[in-house]
Length: 354
Image (cartoon, rainbow, N blue to C red; front, top):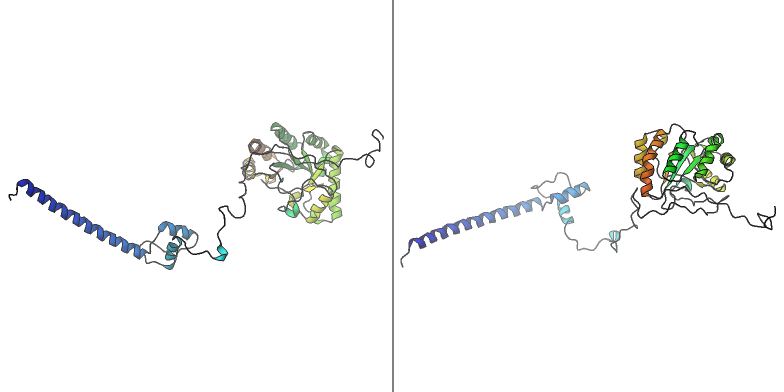
């Protein structure tokens, strides 16, 4: 058979193509073998896995690709293999997909649900031995660290002050916020008109000792009781019918004796959740940041309207109030009411009798 030019050309092309394909296959096979040898030498090294476990303290820092496998690197590789063995008794898996320990707490500053109206139950009957709020297990000696509700309580200590208390009251009025004022007895006696103004604006009162004695709780119960009573008497001299259902120890220096005497007098001991240390005058920006960041549902916020220069607190309130008012229900702590009087026991037998 005669072979033409075209057939000869096709044959040559076929031979060349076959040679190229064969070389590629051989090269690829050699490369793959070298790669497999490298993986074997490295102990199936997984850089991402080892880096993650090293941060948890499981792998050595000297492990690098291409080095002989060490026990720690093999342990890392094994840790990433599917587990088929039964877990040990002390590491039993959770039976459900729900996390152990209950629901996670709400993030600070972010309400878990729409806040309730800013109204506490004002019908709580209070009196000797009957404070409005139950003890708080988390608070020092059972003092309240939270409101126990979704509402946030702003509190102001050491007043009344003739300069700063009116400014704080004006800002609270501007945003329709009710708060709790912890009054020092000697200040209340000196500025009774301001005590009346606080009550007239709908705020709750708190006993803060006669002269801010931070060591009061270390004294005898008789001395503690006399101090608290003297302070309440000074407040009642200005507002005879106002309820004083809270006591806050100066400096938060709580003792069991102080908490017990406050309860005997019908007052809940009031601690706090958020403290911007505004009494140290850190500046308005610092006060704003602490309060706006740390306040969460049920927080009791500690601030000061007296006891020194409080311009930083006043300026900070201009940012704090609109911020918290949008995110939470702000309310004064419930003052409570007296036990209803009964005809024949507390009142005359017949209505109208004197």
